[in-house]
Amino acid sequence: MAGVGFRRWAQTLTKGRGVGISALLSGARAASGASKDSLPGPYPTTPAERAAAAKKYNLRVEDYEPYPDNGQGFGDYPKLPDRSQHERDPWYQWDHPDLRRNWGEPMHWNFDMYIRNRVDTSPTPVSWNSMCKQLFGFIGFMLFMFYIGEVFPAYQPVVSPAQERSDELFM
Amino acid sequence: MVTTTTRAVNAIFHQFSFARSVRHQINMADYKEAPLATRPRTLDPNDYFNLSQEKRRADEERAALRANLKRQYLTQLNNPSRTELIEDPALTRWVYARANPFPHFRPTFKTSLLGIVFGVVPLVTLYYIFKTDRDRKEAQIKAGTRDRKFNLAY
Image (cartoon, rainbow over all chains, first blue to last red; front, side, top):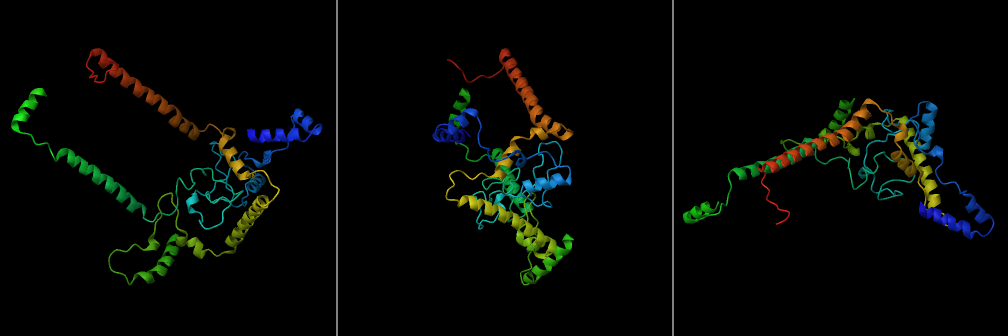
């Protein structure tokens, strides 16, 4: 942000006397990228608003589904399927290959959760029941064995009866 | 509707499984996806059996949107006189939407409940837990019953 401002300031100054300096002094600047109607807005109520919102987000009108209007602060942001970036084609030439995303594509509300370092919703090779049995079975078995180890400790230090008696005095 | 398609897929897969041994086989057609995970595309009946015109038209429209965005991006990317970064309006919209939920916020039962559960309850319960625990320890120290092993000064 500050970098852009400085560059523009430097460009205005170097444009020479007259037009450049007066533009800087008047405070006017060139219009920045996003105009007000390309930003997210309130929940769309009429079909015309829905069509406009779908066009804004680069979605088909049939595909555009806003989050339900329950006051949680989504506005007209589209509700995209909850799929992580792990599931996208690794061999397609994405514009941003590490994010597996193309330029201009609508981003999921939780996009930063679905990146490839984080949550993965791709199909599991093993079924849910099998995974649960393996995990809880292992944890349960280890807990049980540690409990047995507390009840029946092994490798107790071996001391002579004389040493045991003298230890007791200092206890 | 789902059972007929799974039976159809079962019939396709059955001819490969009858030659195997008698022990319990996991048939891929019986694959059940984990909660919140998705089904592999090769086991999705919608991909095999949905050949309707509507689906194809929808896919074509989506491809047209994608191609338009691709064209815009590549024009900017390969422009030799471009000196600045290519701004992504979808990214701008996402950041703006995530940073400005309050204009669309409305206090309802659900939002108030979430606010109380995540905002008020931890504060109050932790205060009470710490206060009572520390008061108990202080009372023990004053009564001389607490075993204080670690001295701050000798």
